[in-house]
Length: 415
Image (cartoon, rainbow, N blue to C red; front, top):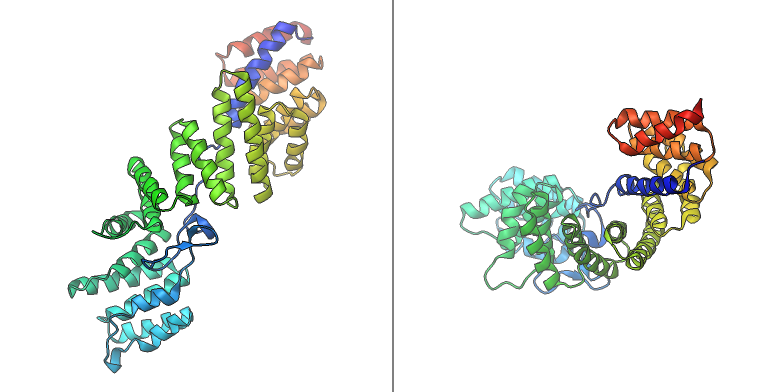
């Protein structure tokens, strides 16, 4: 049997190894521009008087009657290129018909900037962002050639490029849209500017843009989320937790924010030197992960939740939770490793072995799986199997002192 002091050292090493493996995706969650709700502004042409959905306090869906009104302010009067019908269809939210009519007009008269513009606005409402970007760019080029640049077209084109993830083309337009002299700060456009800068690795500029968006709209969940993500990447966990708590309060329906908040609490807990503070953070991580599980009960969320439960030393509960995800033949190796770790700490070594043997088939090059598997075998006095597991781990990490010690300790008893 493992001596008490040796067992303690190994358990401590295993826990540190667990932290290194289990904290697997603290920064991978992010708001996608293509999602619905509060994660992105979707207004085709935000009117000056209102850019916010009063129910969610977040960027609203496109108000196409207002957008189409601004789109038709300069409609030509000649019958051959009259955009009246296309505009009326846009007002009636018959977007496909509006786009078809506007494209017919632009084909007949390629210099009809208003037809290109209405086509672009209709395509935006249909979420055809690549097509909208092409048509709105054509409209803007014609406007500029006539020295009649329309800010509404610039704003819509900036959004189209953003939603099409063409951030390098979106950013100059977003900078122009948010820098007009005398204009009131538009939280939606500031948010999109921040997203473009973030995607282009202009992190400091993105942070300033998101802060400006939050200043204009203190309950903008998307901007608060990104501020939390930026802070967490810098290991500024206090700032990350503050921003992400505000994000989840502003919109509790967004799973990514709860996931990142859980990760922030875990990261701060792992770095704590005060046991009581660490436990408080682990418990906060558990509560955040419970909200995540209600919104998105998939394997990824279960892995995050299990990680929080293990951190708070709720090993049996963690094992029960992780077992549901591990029951699938497609379970990830990380899930099986974490399940094995929970079972080891719950002193259910046979189930730990079962989970870890499966983990080894999924992650055959992960030294920590063999370290923990060897430990689970050793405490059950299955020394030959323990030696084989330790030796596999040592083959992967020949300089690992703990594995060398484990092999030396088990070898005499395995004969």
